[in-house]
Image (cartoon, rainbow over all chains, first blue to last red; front, side, top):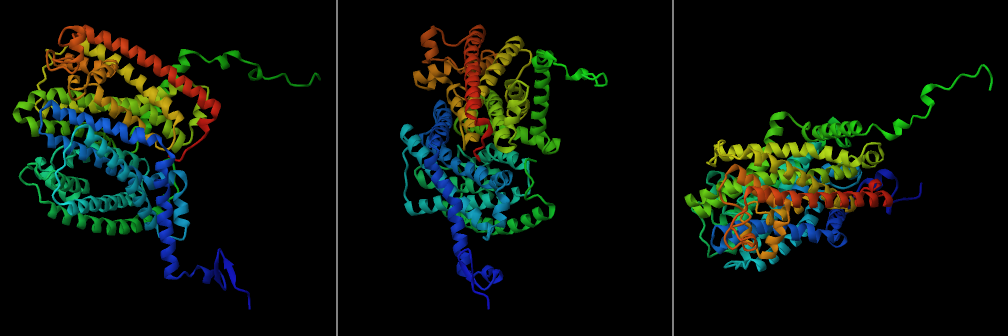
Length: 295
Length: 314
């Protein structure tokens, strides 16, 4: 009888047995993959200090422009707070578009995508890792912009329900990054369209999400945004909770309702991402687009 | 040499003219090819209709954000301010296209298509190639400006009378503004040659910072005096002021006004067309020359350090 083989640290009587992993091995490998994919995003915060200038200071200046528009109009001070909060949350949206949705397109261009598919892990763990690292990265940026802009422009927050505010901060992240996973799956089969769609999904989404004003001012369009765009729902709920004394236009859903919408968005988007990923991977394999670069 | 040995072919003779190139003819050909390539990269990823929607969605949305802000706070009274923000917002999309266009050409060729090193060592002048590539994005940006202005006039009630437009001033400031934008784009291109990782976001972040100091969507007088001074040194401030003054003579301006640094220094509230053109020319020349110097220095350093041959995975 042949001696047991040690195939990359796993004992077995042959390659087939070594490849037959237990559920524990599968879960541990997937968790390691999540950590491995999140690692460069978290550690990158320390390794590339130029982001402090380009990702915090300059976006802060851009946000400031809208603050001055409101000042030119003698707007109530809470509107300055709305702009600051909106400006901070753009970090998440940009991260979702460029570092989630577009990421698989980059990975394909760089030749990493084939390696991901060849590696013995579930592809969703890569997406979860990207999302986790992205959340840490964007939270740092958003918090910094919020603190700096809040202090410079004298934003006075008025919070009555801290626990709900915390929940409303976390839930949109789940929904946003779930949406990012859906888009990443979709972009898997795209070429340059992915880059251009990323471009097209910034300002128009800012507008329909009410980045600088309560989204209810957009009427029916605003209602649609609250129903389908996590940025709009989360931002509106956070504004209502962070500026409890401010007057919001008629038609603004209460934060509790928006929490439920966000929870539903999170579940739906993650389930949809899984289904989309399987469908798109199958299609990409069939069409031979997984390794097509520079198109 | 044997009598039977063939005579050397004429093509093997050294042709000095080939190494020297054909001067301006080569430059123009390089520019034309680079522009065509840039346009193909920019536009042939989809059908023309979707490309049109894509090109105008961004600038129109930016203008709508500001228009809704005006409506929310100012109501009917805020509508007088609409031409100001629509023009500023429309022009700004052109600025972003110009500044990002050149820098992204560097990044695309280095990181995505990995051909930058071949472009650099080709006989074509690198600066000409780069500007040609950037022109395509400027074209897309220009389309966005025109459509946004049309939307502003047709749908947002911006009053526009071609009879009162100062066309000569509009032409002069547009040409000088374009040169300044290309200069700033070149500056960013010089910077991203040296930087890594997240360089893709740098041009838009830089444009976002300029957005604050150029009076694009609010009068400079609201800013602290040192920041106003910074804005007055920027050619884009004068370009936007010049276009506004040409399109809506006598309308609200962004440079001067009561309590502004401009008014306190020059003794009158708002600059006239001649002052705007003079300031735009002076600041534009300084910025463009500085940008060319920065780019040349960055290019030289990149060649010495082998940066064109490296990708950062960004």
